[in-house]
Amino acid sequence: MKLAKVVSLTAAALLLGGIFTAAQADTWQQNHPRRAEVNARLANQNRRINADVRNGTLTHSQAHALHRDDHAIRQEERDMARQNGGHITKTEQRALNQQENANSRDIPPK
Image: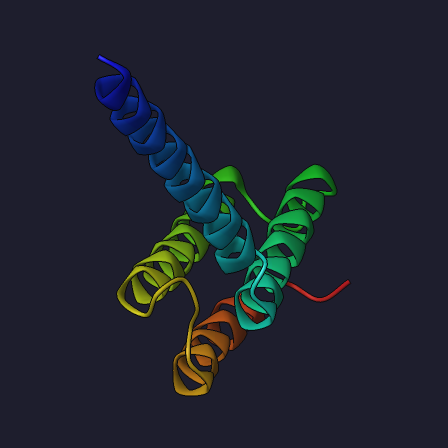
């Protein structure tokens, strides 16, 4: 009976340790510098698009198209990170930046 308790407690401790380690890995992955830079640019573009809609520089349909493009870039970033253990490579970041640059050019300047 005592052996069964020891085994179950050990299994529970290993399970909790694995969950804690996975939680730490997810935090690191989401905060990886290259991912953070890409996502910060996307957030900035989102703010610019919304500001241009408010001031009348962009129509709602134009803004919708730009948001849809940004959403596709963000999804691609997530897919890349999922394939690379939670981070993106420099080459992938460069490709995402080029896509963001193209979308940014479609947002009117201030």
